[in-house]
Image (cartoon, rainbow, N blue to C red; front, side, top):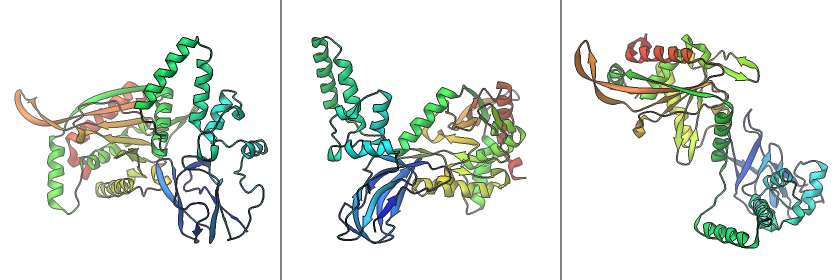
Length: 391
């Protein structure tokens, strides 16, 4: 009896997944537990294993397509076994099943066609097996718009488009970039961002880090120390750890600290849960562990969910100041800039000190300017007297 290969649910927050690469082709033998397809969801790539022995008789979802959790993406059958009519149903409504039966189109192409009230039967597909892709629908829309222009103008536009297309390479967004794009657009358009900067004398922080790293095997980073200082400051200013949902304020009881990690092809934010209960050493070890898992693409969906406050450090890139974008549904994010030496006046004497700017972006619907300023001032005091973090 045929067995479906389905899109797995890999975390509480996962609702859909994208097929990145089939590791087996139609007609190839597979063994139960053998890796057969790579999928990605919310910035994470995972491998799906074969649920049974047999032959990969049918691939239902092509590479690059996205489907909901539990939707069939392939069928495994026994050698010589025939698939019954209707085996390719992916879980859509009855109306959509009929459409899939006669018109092969990707989910994105269907959605785009529906938004523009376009009959898919009028479009010629260029995807595998004649499947209609998103680009096919966009091309059709463009051609319809061009058709309303004078003939000379139409030819000029077509010529310019062809010239541009010959020079430019187009590649679809991967799941990570698509997720970043959607979340940042949502954040920037829905949240009124305000950013405040404060300069901090981090000379004592630099000295503390050097002494800690000399005295033990574990090596601390500036991000570790700033994270610990943020936890203390958030306890004093809990509103920066809250969030908004509709017309309600969510008073998060725990501090779940997101630490932005830069990857070769994007950005991911693993979350240290219940940071308020962790010592500096525990915090440092967990940040290091999560960061390593992020770079090795081994994070689980739950390890990037539930954040209440995020820290993003661009100091290693020589950035003096920037405006970080809030990571929804959080209400604040701290940008950490480079540490540099400069002359500072202390008691009428000019001395050389290590200084750094911190950039705090916050949701002005929930957090007032004075509230954000008080948080930054408390954070500044902690960082300028960092030994207090160890007590």
